[in-house]
Image (cartoon, rainbow, N blue to C red):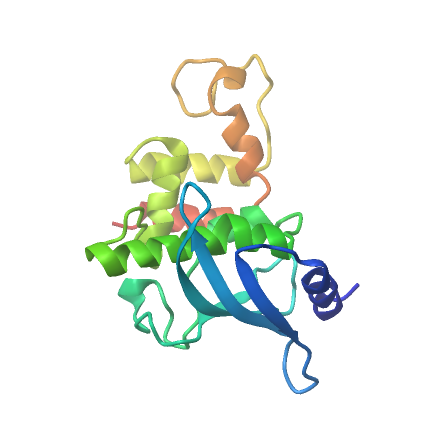
Length: 213
């Protein structure tokens, strides 16, 4: 099933009580859903809403759809995590690659990623800053790997990504490739398996980025 048809079929089956939307199938453009995304609080009560548009792109479900805030409530500004063309910066590129490697559903994308993104936008509107913010661009990618590896040592992360790019997993009882002295199975085994999903060229690119001051 191609990207457009899959998106349309998922949209037709979508039932979310916090998202009032309509599906638009236009031969002149990619299909999309647009409507009102209500933001629930911890008790499930709606506290605000955003008007949004979710447009499928080629490669879905292995590439995320584009998301737009359509009422011009959020400034089109990188500092607000909105690209110049108006689509929202939901997550960093390496996160997208990991999330979409085996495909993602429209429902999961909305509930797990779009909803928190707009909750964070509302928090900034009310308080002047993001509650959970990752920098934009390369700095955001670095912050993602800092979090993954649990260290701020960029050069060490760069070397570890180079090792993972070789796709040669250590034996379970071998010493971990990070140099900690711990057994691999009790150290970076889970992270190795997770990041091994990325293509070697991606890992090499991110390794070079982490090495750059």
